[in-house]
Structure formats: structure tokens, C-alpha cells
Amino acid sequence: MKDYTYRDLTLEFLNTLHVMVMRGPQCQVEYISFYFQGEFYEFNLSTFNEIFGFPLSLDLSLRHVPCEFNPNVFRGDILQDFRYNSSS
Image (cartoon, rainbow, N blue to C red):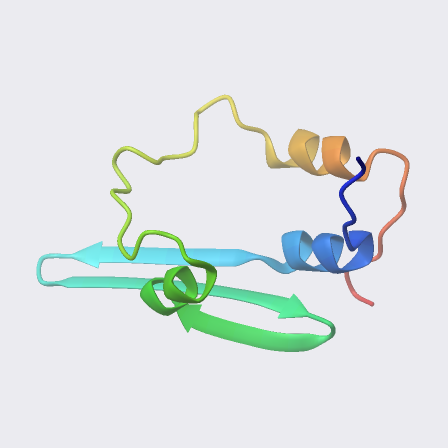
């Protein structure tokens, strides 16, 4: 059985996704922002996680990006031959 997906919406989300985590002595700020159907969204991570049913807090020390991760290769793997213009 083939799972139905929304390729353009997925590409828009992935190409505009930005996660910001700032930690200080008595401060931790976590935001996620993205565009979806041309609309800009920004949430704190707790709200985002609650909406999608993810754990409310993440231990970032255990969920870091591997040093070998290359975002350009990752984007190429997802897009393959599909030409996507993130500005539109």
C-alpha cells in the first residue's frame, strides 16, 4: 500500500524549517519556525511538540546532529531531481 503524501507542502516545510535553541545560565529559549502553505508559523518547542504529540522536552545532549551530517547532501537526497524554488 502506498502512503499518500503532500510533496510540495513537505518541501516547503523542510526548506523553511528553522530551529533555534539558546541556553544560558538561567535561560533556555527554544523556538521553531517554518512556512506552511505560504503562511509563517513560529512556536516555542513545547507548543510545537504538544501539537504533534512529541515529548514535551528533549534532551538535546542526546539528540544532537551528527558531525558527519551535511545539510546540502540531505536536501539533495530528499529532492532528487525535483527542482524546488524555496522563495516561491
